[in-house]
Image (cartoon, rainbow, N blue to C red; front, side, top):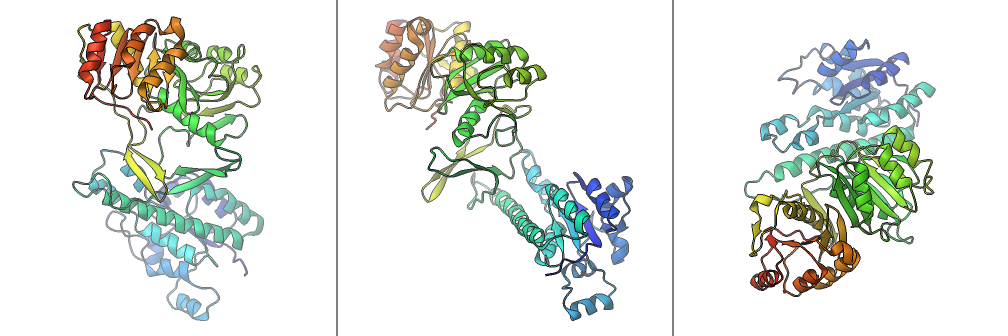
Length: 523
């Protein structure tokens, strides 16, 4: 199949990123540009020569731009088959010019509905009509028309035109497939949104998840498993998937899981925070007056387990923090943070033994909240739930023992309660000076998790620590263990049939206990 020379392009874009440079490159190769409304004005202000679509069609834009490109002279020029005499005769009879390229991207519907306060009529105004029609028409006629539906495609398209004056069949076919995927995803996003507007329904009757492959990984959890990373098309929050890797070898499947956990732990703190993750559980985490202090306290939580860990921080990593990480026998697989200053970057890539291999990921400014829904795959289906992003309010907590915790203990209980939600249930944490000192995770019985947390903390650090439990104590058997270890206060949700037995045990040992009223299981 011959590739027709690109002589004429129709440009109408909502996202104007890179469009001036792209249009300028086309004009320099002799391509005639037709455009509409805002895009035309944007190009003209940048000095790009543009022909007005309305002047060509002899029909004005109307209804605030709702109708502008929906015209036979536009669609015939896109859909005409250049090898059909009857198509070309119709073009001539009606003074229609052929379009060899269509450059269109769509109204930002997904970005609009990402605002939780968006009104329905505002969402409706961001439903593109002409754009998808133009894209689909151009994609259908990819034998003769190049469809460009995303700014990231500009460079490759312009490179081929600069080389040969046209685009290859292979590129046009690939752009065709991407265009139909783009419009399909767009329509599904609209359908999902309005399905969710049904009164009285939290979850839509049907749900479509659109994922774009971001990278193919070396392997999955184990070397015999293949794996890839996909990103959600509507994901715009600071996240691991949106991060930029600025140093180190490729990330593994397990690295990605652990880094995501590390980032979620630190994102909600106002003070400097550091989390140290091993096998998707925190083996250490802390807050401090500086990032270096938070890291020192975090790595002290379980130094043995911290070897080969991944680290999350909620502030830009500075030179002091990097110097601490580069000291001694610490071994870090990966670090995720809002950013790294020049001193920190220089230290981390030149000083420690692991300098060549450590992965450094920059995510930008963190939001305290993350996505509103979570999905987990089952064989043959998917579970969907609201994410556990509940902000705990100590004002709602209830002291249930005779002895009340003082203000300093309440602050420590608040830290412990913020940590235990990130540990696999049955989860028990011991914390001291706003740092984890012992963690019991993923045990089949809660009392075993208590034993593990106490053993991890050791006699000295367990003394005076506070204990947090992600769910209620089904029996009072954990309380004597905590008392013997020197635990100074306990926080748990409450709600067991045997709550009073647990309260009585705390009173017997003089340990204040707080009921938080909400549990934080993490299976």
